[in-house]
Length: 410
Image (cartoon, rainbow, N blue to C red; front, side, top):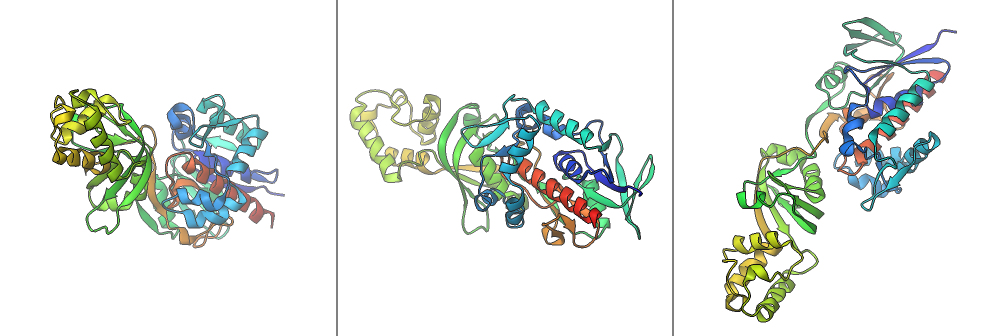
């Protein structure tokens, strides 16, 4: 009996997971990777530690971390979710640990642990891996597919397309009948052209409440969490989450908008004002810079004082009601114009990709091209930072592999 052939295009997280899940003794699975090595993004993710998934085991709660794709993933996560990811790796000798913010990493703190596990498992399952073999086009035939590459044409019974946000992958999907939502960056930092702020690079506050106001938008987007000051402006989890939820709107506005930061969200504006008034009565003749009643680092406190147009050497006892109101405003609702975007370390996440209505999420099979399966970031799915993007890759890859296996068995 002739073996069924499966071509997996893309050697990233979703491609590997799908190839492993599809493999069986009656099927020849071949993985094609355009680059010189597979799993390059896995290797550099999480600062080289690989944020494998997130410690969130309720699908209804899990999907709330996906600005795009949450609704489609709801059923998918009921079939393969972080618990299953943890068990999958544990069964193969890789233990994961949970950090305080819910992110999960291998206990080795080394992404090579994940890369080695996936490589070993793929080879054990009989997957053939071909690197430096970019697939240039896919043609649907009566019996399956024809893959075109510089090394020649290859026939396959089934295809798993898992090329991430690659334009080439989008072109191939489009040639097979799919609609592509235009890709735009999703996780990025905010450029703030404030020289005094940038000089505080490395300082952070946690928690903060950050709001993003965009022209024409009725309601600002809001996130609560840590903010990190950088050489180019603002970063940290609260800012990155805002960048994900506002990705399309920010792109449309040329990455121009206004960020409002409540640096002390645990206090109401009236409570902040009362705290400053108490400081005025207790501060005596001390300079404002030398008596900081907030939880902010001293240098950041001095920045707030100067931003409120108060001389840091002013004595607390001489501080006017107007000055207290201005300082209250800076602490509770400081305005920072966003004038562009930066990048977020080694995370390369985009929103956009194959329109989700064109995919059957039970098996990750195309609804417009039977026999074509899809997984990972080629889909219009993206999560916030914290292991959610890898989880959607593991889930869609596993479901696609199971779907291929099930189809070939019939």
